[in-house]
Image 1 (cartoon, helix red, strand yellow):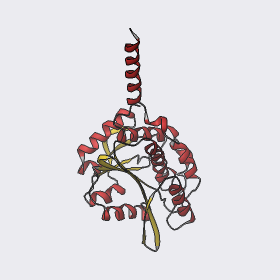
Image 2 (tube, rainbow, N blue to C red):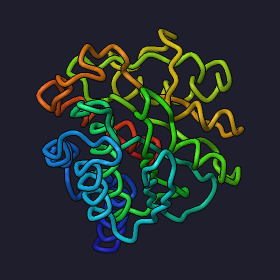
Image 3 (spheres, helix red, strand yellow):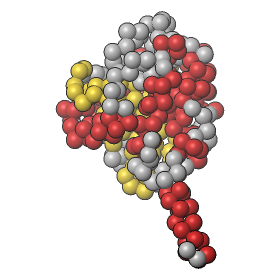
Image 4 (tube, rainbow, N blue to C red):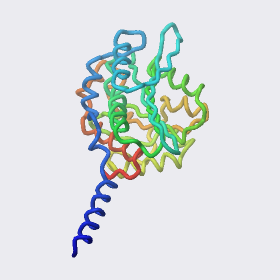
Length: 271
């Protein structure tokens, strides 16, 4: 092999390495670090000091966030967005950031926030091939599921999303994510496609069968004609209780969900 052939082979190898470079190499902070910091805030019921601290935490972790505030029931609420430009399709990935009254809300809200903040870190350093909006809904847990933030968002939303994934309670140590009934009822093909990706990442976590019909933020979006599905582990014994604390959750579960989202936003990602 002459020098020109060797040089050509090296160029091919470098090109292949660049092609298959993994996005997580440039992820700034793992989900569990965001999770432990966010959980130190404690209760985040709207109108409380914890609610303000939690909103400030999210905003301060994002470069150029967009904030949509609205006033209802005598309280200010804040939906927080980070938008990444890109080609079609445009997708949304969402979680709520508030908690119920007297609930720390580690898994119920905190787990989704942590994974989305890590995803924002990664997207900021590795531009996605598609447009991606990261959405933090407020007011989901008011009155046990008033869905105030997502309803406010949906009522103003122009239908330009291919789909929106709504994440909730994704940090359980015994993580099992069944298909949600309303999601399957309205968008069965989308659910099957997303679950195939999930099963490729973690086949023992993503279970392709319906177990519950759940009223969550996706339900507000569906009512307004937006293609949205719920990704939730509802078999969590500490839900809506004072015992929903960070020690009930798993670093590995958060990492699994982070890798799952990487497969969504970077179709070429290899885990």
